[in-house]
Image 1 (cartoon, rainbow, N blue to C red):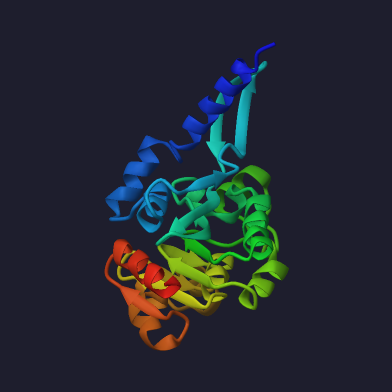
Image 2: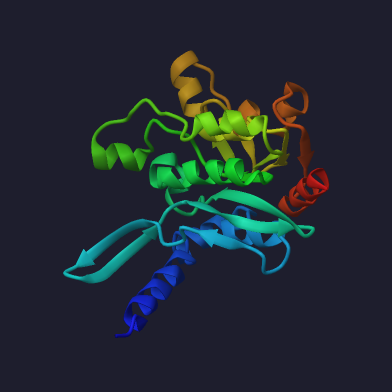
Length: 248
């Protein structure tokens, strides 16, 4: 008996997962001057040390027994090394559903936090997504929004007293994403491409009648004095250098 067909199917799905949100979404993401989630992990970690967990978690559409379409979860997790020392990494993929929490597989975020806790390893969060409540896509497909929970919040709290926790704000980060950035021992954001806020401009405009841009609401100029972010840098690669220095 041979397991080769099953192994081939796994490799096929891993290949699809590495395409992230598809060519069009990836190109759109890069046009904003941003690295993809896999490029970020590549630049952060020592070469060839990333060991991904749950790469083929996602949502699939079948025709009979044949896989017709596969969308990977927009949260990547795994272990790797920084300057030879092992760390746990969790990173949002903005090319899949804009990094929205409802496009992820909740168990991956839980496992990521639990893995750092149980293995007692430093953890790095590369945050480029929003929180819960439901994205526009979720509202259109499900017909409702929801009151969100922060997956593995107990572990998020425990990890603050157990292991070094580092977070990078690498996009327009709101809600639970903002909580994941600030619940850290060291945080860094990148000028122009990243903003940090509880809720976005549309919510602020609807709730209090103030029309603010993302930069005015939560850009680097806001957080130079807010205390929510430790360091502000000009490029993503510089942010990774700061992370490596902190963990040294």
